[in-house]
Length: 259
Ligand code: ADP
Image (cartoon, rainbow, N blue to C red; front, side):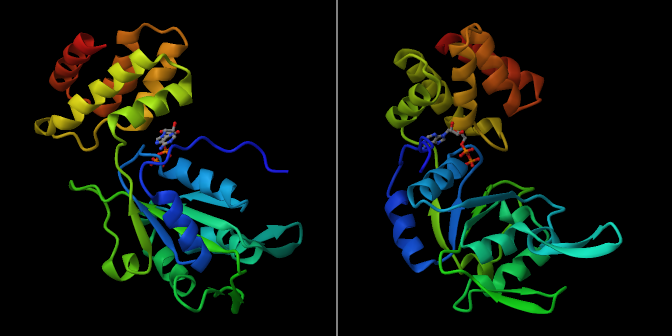
């Protein structure tokens, strides 16, 4: 029996687009800044399609071996252990490579033959090639980060995916998400969204990433749990954004007026 669906509020046509893409099993790329609901979306859609989801949070040490598998020593023997990608390919799961651009370049090489008509995975340590299960699908996320310091994804890789952009939802939707996620009252939710909108428009602050829906959800949770509103906003929204003391003070003043 299916368990309860993760809560996800559609922002655009992403649900329909994904369902049609899944029908053809074309790889799917979720683009957008952190905290815009990419992970939640994929959890929701995997549940809706009744497919197993395997999530890998990629970081700079993530290698193809981590994904494909390795030999391990067990007692006196060496045994082969499938990695999560191999498991997904065999079982027909949806694999979600979160922040794929962060991973080592050999990861991109490893998924190559899975992202075209071949739909196969080459396991070099075993000298084996396996055909993907018909339900297998590859999904990745990528933060385009228009500032310095973010890793890029090569056009030759990007063009193997259907891509959908995730951005901050419009104010009424975002407030609805806060109410649903945390149980906070609609009025406070609206105020939190107004704060976010204001800070998102302050491009002169030069923040690397601005207020995400995730930060708003965190602030709303603290408020709902009984922490004073101003303190909640300070620790959940302002402090995570920057370490610049002047900017912190300015943002605190702004938020205090708005909450
Ligand atoms: P990302 O993967 O883009 O970094 P997440 O999916 O982890 O972001 O989203 C962060 C949080 O924001 C979620 O845990 C959820 O509470 C909330 N959220 C963001 N967008 C939505 C949405 N459209 N529907 C429901 N919750 C959302």
